[in-house]
Length: 143
Image (tube, rainbow, N blue to C red; front, top):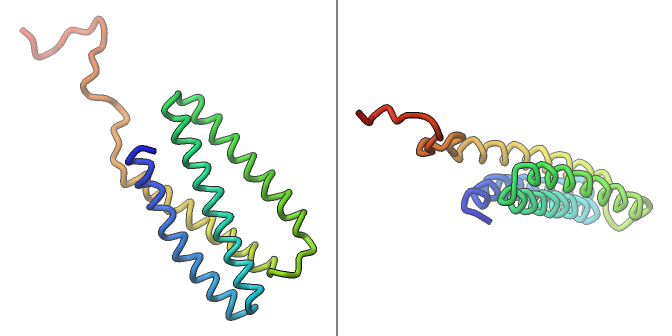
């Protein structure tokens, strides 16, 4: 991963971890240990899914913009599929609170998305390389 990718990861992961910790505490207070376990699993799912996506997109971005978009869409659909299968498999689980899990996933996903967007805005990356020489164009400074 490049330095920019790590900055974006930190910008999203740190606030999400804090929000996740608050969610675990609130769920423990409201639903006991089952709520805390459900919320904790929700935080872990969000952190794992979004970190894997960020790594895949960053790696694909070094190859080409087309691969970056394909990686973003592929990881998105893979996350949805894995989450659906996981929720179906644990549908009747009584070890943890499904409502605490679901609410935590939604809240942490919103937090991660906002943190990631904020991280991108703070990068200050150039969209145009000012030092590129355009073929067939005369330099204005030469006389």
